[in-house]
Length: 71
Image 1: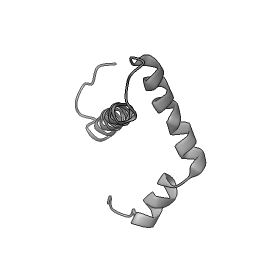
Image 2: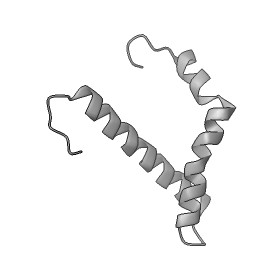
Image 3: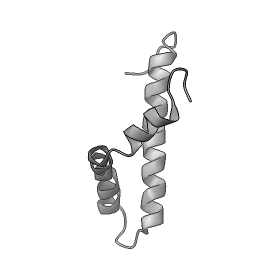
Image 4: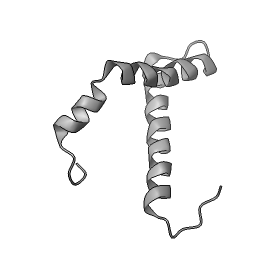
């Protein structure tokens, strides 16, 4: 956990049904963009990869300000 953030803080965020519903748009988009036979497991893998990548880019952009990131 990050300093000052507790597990209950994270659980409240992750267990919020409205938030989960909003994130489901990525499942829907990837399932529609994939081949008709894409499995639920592959959709989940692609969504997890996408969100991890997005988080990593944002994290690096905010925390490594001395690097000249592409715009």
